[in-house]
Structures are given as structure tokens and as C-alpha cells.
Image 1: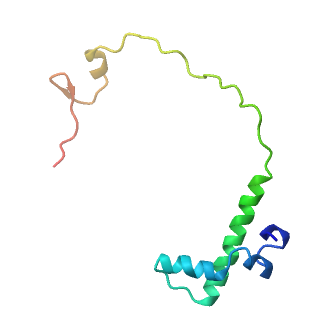
Image 2 (image 1 turned 180 degrees about the vertical axis):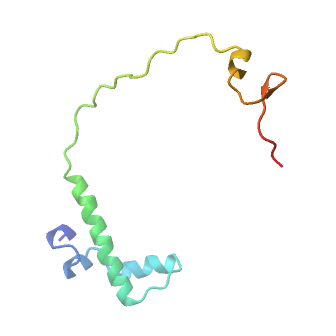
Image 3 (image 1 turned 90 degrees about the vertical axis):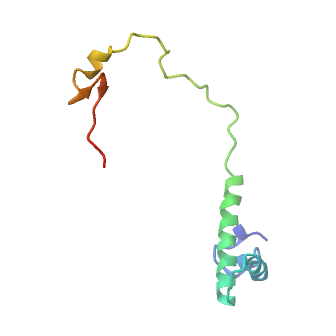
Length: 103
């Protein structure tokens, strides 16, 4: 019986992941769990396993879609001259952008 045979959160799901297994893993992780928490986590793990089982039912895609490069080809072009780049700067000094003083 799998977790998918019964509704999520039912008592049958608790058999998929045993609360004792949850307590063992919790002990390894040095996490204290009471019985109620171990049972709740066992049910949650069963839900997670249901989701993984659902992934097995997803049909496989046989062909990868052809990838198309949507980027333009690189081409070398002339850039701005230093004077052109500094033309709209609010402040410059000795050929560099001048920013506010940081103290």
C-alpha cells in the first residue's frame, strides 16, 4: 500500500513513514519530538512522498525543443570619447567623473 492509495493524512499514510523512523531521524538530528509531533511529521512525509509519486506520472518529453539564439551577434563599434562621456557629467576633474565626497 502506498500513500496514494488512501487520502493524504489518513491513518493508512502513517504506515508509509513510520513515526518510529521519524523519531530515529529526529534523534540523529538531536531534535526532541513528542509522539504527537512524530505522528504529524510522519503524515507530512507521506504527503511529500505522494508528491514525488505524482511526479512519476508526468509524461516524459521525447524531444528537446530546438533552442534559438535570440541575442544579436557581437559587433565592434566605436565608443564615446572621453570628452563625450564626460560632457553630461555634473562634475569632472582631470578627465574623471567626480563624485560626492564620502567621509
